[in-house]
Amino acid sequence: MEIFLSKQCESLTGSLGRGFGYYIRSFYCKRKNVTHYYAQRSKHTVPADGHWRMILTCAELAQNKLHIADIKIGWLELQTALYEAKSYIASEQVRRNHVEKCKDTYDARDIINLKITFGL
Image (cartoon, rainbow, N blue to C red; front, top):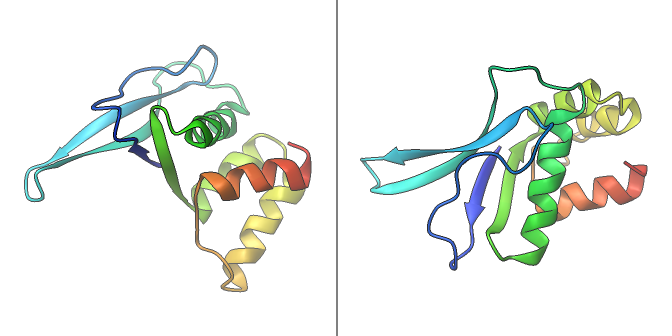
């Protein structure tokens, strides 16, 4: 999952909270002279729903536009996170959207819509 920072935020790395098992890391691209931010799995224990909760937290932060402006996540990463969190119906819908060529990438608004639609 790629994280896009708002204009008010110069950098954001580290943990967003306890219990996710994921943290935000930066990657500097010399060729484009720009820093990218990604969510990365911790080496420590990760709860089954930790990946999904990290995605959802970033999407909710993006609604406020204070630190995070938006996120971008591929269908396979999202589908896997939902499946690991035992949200099988939502996971299947994400897979179906890909197969039917409806949607391959998701942003913060899409994540919030998934949460509301499937009661996650």
